[in-house]
Image 1: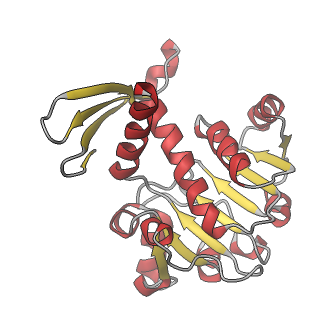
Image 2 (image 1 turned 180 degrees about the vertical axis):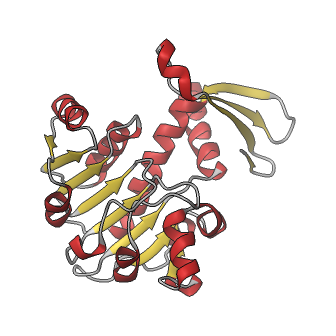
Length: 255
């Protein structure tokens, strides 16, 4: 995943996926990020690609939520108990005055353990948790929708991080129909993300129905327009986020 700024920085991330790594006590996803000068090509930093990805993914969702979640959002529901979950919760706690965090997972034992570690609450019933939450963030490997549009309450924000292939889904068509839809990049989401590609294919969503991408929001495009609006952000990840995160890490390290 390469990205560059002319005359500034360039970088590339190399990622490997070894599903059986858990047998030897390692994460299945490993990676390295090489940051270089875009003027000379000289290497500047070698960064843990796995940690870079976890942090920039959570940061991107929180950045989008700055524009899309209600300012008074206090209850975050985390759907998923994987490596991303703690980073997502930390990022949301940094941008909204959360007073309640609930965690749902297919394995209740994992959800309870993660909740205890993070000062959150386990959510035994997904529907009830979705109906109560101001922000619903999903980071799963689900291939069938978990979040149903009928459960979404006016004013909630839905953050979909899993579903990174066309065959994967985290929310159903009704969720997409009811929400104002935003994506990190149109190029990625309309080709790779099942939560976008499937509704586009069956007519539940049109290309014009994608209101803006993350760069548009940062540049001033309208995000949430009312406290009753349901917003949905679909993240698939982009090399631009890797470069921005690597540049920040390098700048802080160099002082």
